[in-house]
Image (cartoon, rainbow, N blue to C red; front, side, top):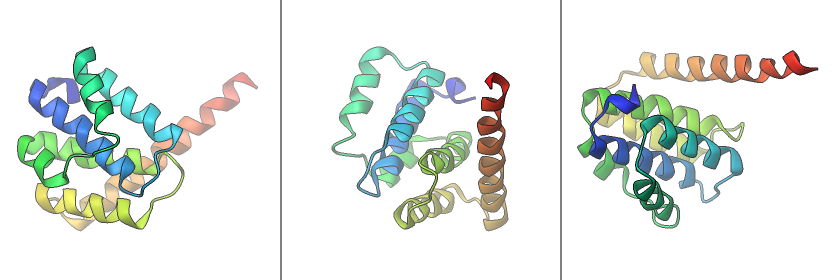
Length: 135
């Protein structure tokens, strides 16, 4: 679905994920892997991926990214922001505030945000259970 956004939206989406991942002052390997995965799904050109990686030290403001995104893009950004924030196994207070800001700008109601958090929890549970296939 992200790859159906315009190229400008895909770039803003990836930059927003970097902002969410780095907002707590700590970028962990799992977050970087998720961002790389999102850039791959977005089919961003390799030069654009370098631009996104360059924002790791100077993240773009949430509002700036969100104004570029369409309604669908904003909804995908909210979903993926929760995914990125969950990567390290814990939601930092700053990540939660960023997610709330994204939801507010996108006009998403609280019950829908709760559903997204639950979906992410279910997603990680299923993903982690796949390790048993190879034991």
